[in-house]
Image (cartoon, rainbow over all chains, first blue to last red; front, side):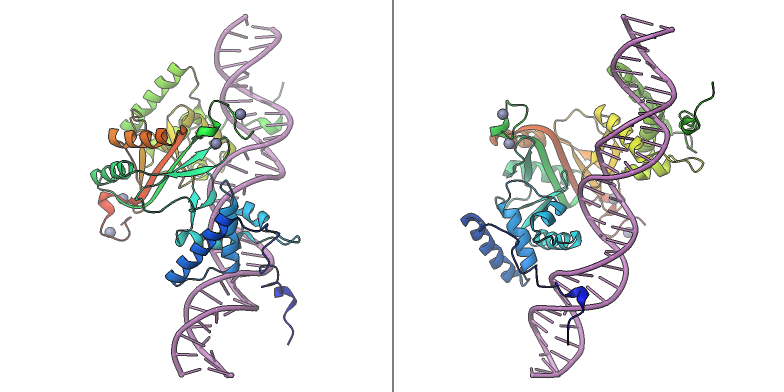
Length: 175
Length: 175
DNA sequence: TATGAAAACGTAGTGATATAACCTATATAA
DNA sequence: TTATATAGGTTATATCACTACGTTTTCATA
Ligand SMILES: [Zn+2]
Ligand SMILES: [Zn+2]
Ligand SMILES: [Zn+2]
Ligand SMILES: [Zn+2]
């Protein structure tokens, strides 16, 4: 019973990890942690999801959904945008990835311990890097602000664009 | 010397204020303030810009650029998106409007005194209203966070989605 | 091991947001 | 007036995100 022609690629290309260089040690460790988290949550870190997550771990800067699709393309076969968005939705739900609303781009939460109520993401206009930053004082002040306004928070978008320490006094960055 | 056909509408429809109801007293005052500010800045609050600003002042909720274009349409003639975006860019530059990155929508800064270094926008999922909120403690904590990270801020995106006081204990809002 | 239900993914099309490129019109001042 | 800068018109396109629906895989249960 032959497969239909239109659907034959289901696990053909997606099974290969694009032309990925071997993941760095740090990335590999992070992926292992992600596996553990997913197993603990009773959800599946499938090939596609792991591939997208690995790309985010490997990148020094936030990636757009279409950028991810291009990065992970192999042999003139590219992930459909919806596929990337579905993977991103999953990763965000599991707390493994984060969306930057001010950039329409996505990052892993690798350097984000997730322990804080309020994490601000510092986005460098020069080199593109994003660093999470948090403090008890910041979280407390925001919490006070919200309770004083009698506002019940659901989702916080805290992003600051500017220049990181390495990119100051230049006017540009990205040497 | 007849005009060319293709360009005859330059100030024809844009001069009319759509089918706008008369602006409320509060809106009219805000518009007067905006005029003053623009004159002081040496910039021009043109008809288009004033019309867009008036729509933002009159709205209880953030408006998208295309939504603004529809609102301000008159007689089957709608502003081109680029026209709205240009007006919004101007208003934002002058501190009269604000973009909500998490919603791709725009609000006036009518209820935003602009005196604070850091203003968080509280966006209600229920009724759609947006209230700015700020405090010295919040601004200070964020400032500390940034200087500790040696990060030079350019633009801050501080938005919290959730439920305002009137919309809590419902699960919905918008009665 | 069969099989049914849920989850994941493929494919095509569309919706929603934002800007580029180029030209015309208006305002302001020399 | 005439030059220059600013503003706006028009068309097309770029960019980001999702709907709808069918197919495949997985996993628990019979
Ligand atoms: Zn930098
Ligand atoms: Zn440099
Ligand atoms: Zn509300
Ligand atoms: Zn209710």
